[in-house]
Length: 164
Image (cartoon, rainbow, N blue to C red; front, side):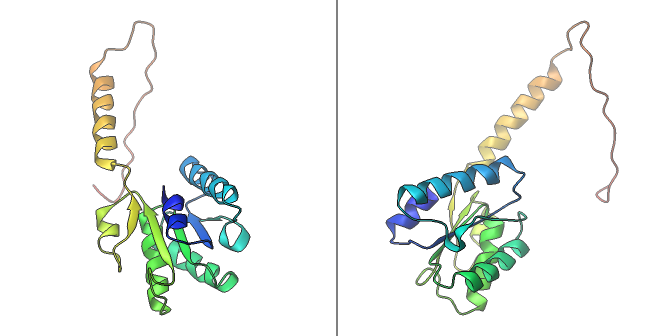
């Protein structure tokens, strides 16, 4: 949806900045981005996907790198809203008009990031609240069930960190 939106708005030099290459979500988004661009006889700006961390800092670094290598980039599709916010910060600090010259699309629709970004982010809404609700229900079901006779359970351990 993100790449289709960017193409529909006339963007043709689209960079893809995403999370770590060992994450399935980053790989899937990258693969679909590259395939859709190729289907449109295009390729990602800079000729490659930019894998990094799920962070604003990575978004800022990646945006600087993309602009150095492909200054004609006219859009960024980011693997999450944190990355997108970092990209937006870098573009704004470099005087780049968003969305006039360069458009940005994030992923997750995390309000804290998407709404606080300047300008507010266009983003893919994955309905994280519903995903969390369903995960909690499945966990409660699993906790409530009794292990079958002969089944082994994995022992739990407490890992103490700074939060307690």
